Amino acid sequence: MKKLQQDAESFQKEMGWEIRKESYEVSREDLLNNYMLLTTEVAEVAEEFRKAFNLTYKAVQEGEAKQQAFEKAKAVVKEDVGKELADCIAYITKMANYFEIDLEDSFYSKMEEVKHRKNKDV
Image (cartoon, rainbow, N blue to C red; front, side, top):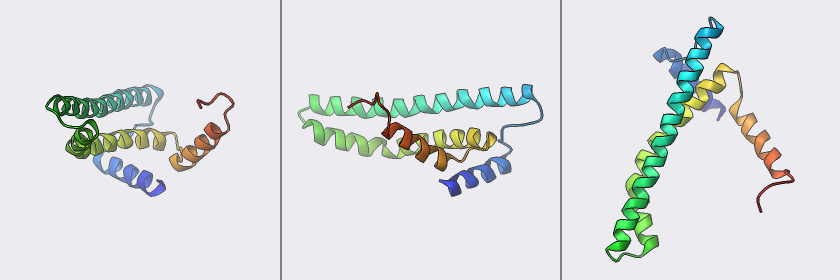
């Protein structure tokens, strides 16, 4: 994850896509814009899931077994789901880099916190 985050930072600099730091107003504008772009990408992941569920439903209606239909549908959307998730990672790493957050450390720290929660779903 550390390498991915470094590579994303280099790519974003090369493309001129970093979140600007020259003032509160500029940073606020860039952060809000990138947050909106992230939510758009998350919605595009949902659209791919919907496509898979619709393909599954149609195949089941045509007599195919549910699991087999779903496996075929997953294969149809797999590449596009990967692209949309990659877009999400790009925006997440951009925001993490702006705040100088090590996502790998944050991830493992958060998972440890979740593991020890008193109110976790069982």
